[in-house]
Image 1 (cartoon, helix red, strand yellow):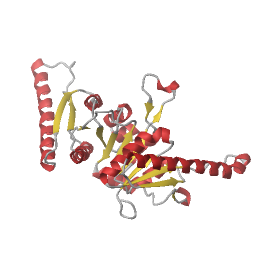
Image 2: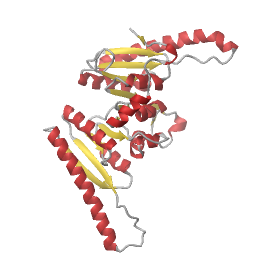
Image 3: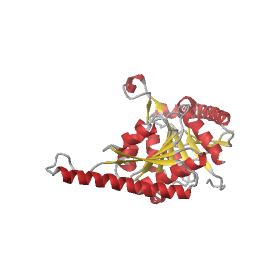
Image 4: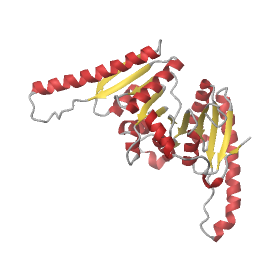
Length: 324
């Protein structure tokens, strides 16, 4: 909730061309929740490099802010055309990372997009790339973060969540179950497992077979406990599990996600790099999934992130401007 006690969904906007899918998805989600949609366009002040730049800076700043206000007005119109939702457009005079992380402290959900690749960089990896701001939010925000490359394909239905029993996966599964129940769509829980033994090791075939069966049984048993718990908490929820032998859990999740409208993963929140902060599976899913992905931190991580982010106001004493 924001300072006025209102439920909010926050979406970062740059140009409407690059952020339209994220904007439309966020507008529909805010409408479904009965929440205020907050559009945040971050416009850091130009850096003064020398005497010439110092003379031009006020003019450049005025031009950039005018363009940002027009982008926000266009984004607000697009949001209202997409859903019946209350919208607040905010021009934040700071970096996108800081502005969105600050607004995330009181939001139910933060939504970010992915920019189109240049022809030179696209290569064999498709038409989109995950921006650094999206990855930063997914790794550091204290609320769930949705990264929307594109809207779900026509006919897509259901929610897929990756689960391995960790606290981060527990939080992701809980969020996914509540979301699927609210939308009355199927939930698919995917668990990838592998035998904790090297096939090349000098082991008797029987010993390896026993370990293989034990690992699979443990994965299936743990997942069944989870499914029973969610069915009890959400009567009527259509949930099924899938247990896959695969050393790469991201591959199993992405395969299951084909035809789904949303993928949900956890954020384990430690380590020096983004892949460690998110966990390798979540990092891979974020980079490779075509549709929307929600990254959910567990409660302990969320609280720790909130304590580590004393962002009570914009940098440099600037204030947000609400654009009419």
